[in-house]
Image 1 (cartoon, rainbow, N blue to C red):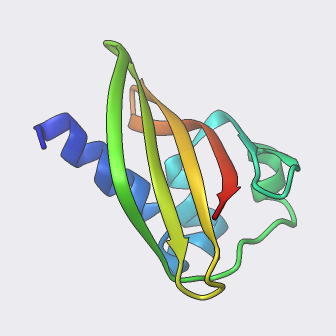
Image 2 (cartoon, rainbow, N blue to C red):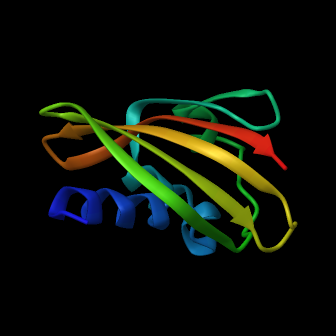
Length: 115
């Protein structure tokens, strides 16, 4: 893995950590102001949903098959699988990260259930 791949992989791992998932403050450090998500539930989430009442479950998850594609000098696409150790559910994930003045921020995320 090159340095950019390592940095983005660490960021992907950070936002699925249980302590970050339940903390609006910690999650807010990762999410872009314009963040949105197409959840595996079929629901669309926005940054404001995480600022208000939505909290994520503190599930233990593991990433595999991580791949990064550069979309330009300030944007990357990641694709990977997540296995939720708590629920036993697998999903395919994709994220778009944008480079901001404060560092890389998660701009878009999508989860699709898999078998």
